[in-house]
Figure 1 (cartoon, rainbow, N blue to C red):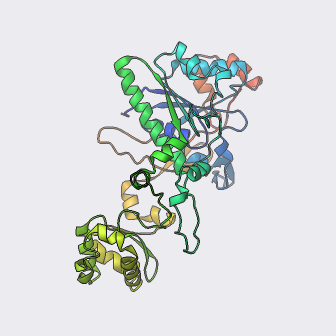
Figure 2: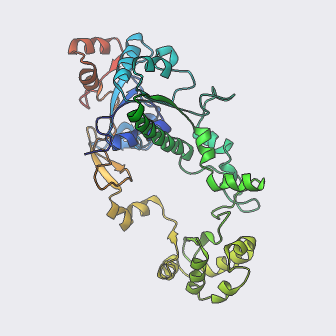
Figure 3: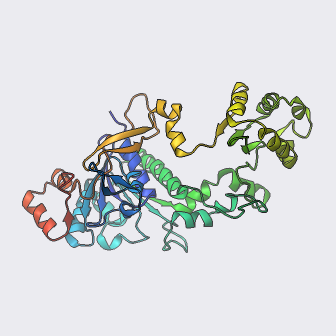
Length: 414
């Protein structure tokens, strides 16, 4: 059993924020129909290398990027710019519980696929729009890409080495977090709207902006500014409100030490065999440690450099002090904890035989929360969707294929 079994989602998204959200809906049991352009499909199909290897060892057309956010969906390759294609999309939306899209502001109105048009025929529809800047405001028509949003939202201003340090300057995060945050907010909003619909019978239009979401996700840094009126700056791996809470170089690598309260600092001092620093009035309370950050960090930097990461981890673990090595992804997926949690899975794939995936990290005691369906080939389910959802016969589908309105993928059985 899955939590969202029976829920129908029409997915008009591509790239990352929207597909991330709809993949979560699919993992939770929703039937997600992904509409893609014939010929090219979702842009991320070509965002490689790397590409998935075929069973014979050659490359497929499936980029790893695409495979990371499209598990559990059915792909219908449909040209919505053609009147017949737009009519098919409208018919699918009339049967859907949720439509999710990330076209530019107003971009779907000319195809009759905007909320105002679709809700006339399906007033219970939950319709979620994800754009760079939302449906209102002077920037609503501007495109929004993750790196630009990371810059504009202030995230890059607090990410990277501090001024005066080697490599100083604004840096983006290594994954597209602005897109991912928007996806998380979208999935939360969709499920809240579905719960409200269960009480009222009415759907609604959800407006998600990458810019809004990233600013909201500035969290304590945003409030640090709003409370003080002073914009925080870059601090490398250090925390603006907690000390010590950063990466230290050891004799053979790096170690993240995360002291969250005064009791943990007392235990850190014991693990370092330096109880005097815990008794020092400058460092006894976090307030003082923040004020005297430079003095304390200079001492800790020298100290952690005297032993290996493993030796320090053993000492800190014994004292119950949060810490962790800075791992590369090959080390991550070899981690016994990751293996025990089953985070790496493999799903059957029509071209490669198997495709690796990172399972949905939600674990529920009474429900399945990860789809066992691989990310679809372009048009893999075109015939299936048109038959099962709209009752089209073979002749009608063949005519649509002949006129380029629909594309089917014979390899995947579409």
